[in-house]
Image 1 (spheres, rainbow, N blue to C red):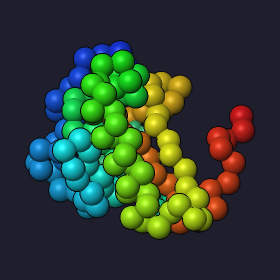
Image 2 (cartoon, helix red, strand yellow):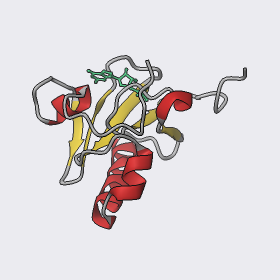
Image 3 (spheres, rainbow, N blue to C red):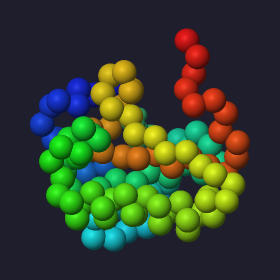
Image 4 (tube, protein in one colour):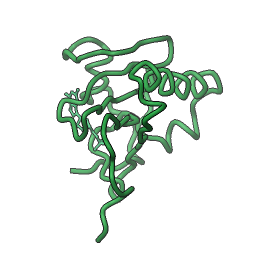
Length: 126
Ligand code: 5GP
């Protein structure tokens, strides 16, 4: 079920547990601002999730409330992960789902990195 991105941050969400090391993940990158790990149910040859270390429900919450250093650190981490995975030359796709129409399921901001194959149209046609 999609989450309501206007609700307060829930520290019990699954990605918060992954960040705290309470649930295992296949980590690929970590720095002061971000953590990246492989999606448990990959939708492409490469499907990696990058999350900020701060407690932000969604892109909306993050873009409104995060500090400049957090925003810069998170954006740079996404680029770093994509470069480390060799995705720049073949190309890749970033996606952040927000709320019901975006079908966001986990209420901790995450950017999906998809790659490793041609990715087709940007969104499904209705
Ligand atoms: P959303 O639909 O919120 O944009 O994406 C949530 C993503 O988190 C999905 O692609 C889903 O497969 C992934 N996911 C959900 N639970 C877990 C988990 O416990 N571990 C990992 N690695 N990925 C998860």
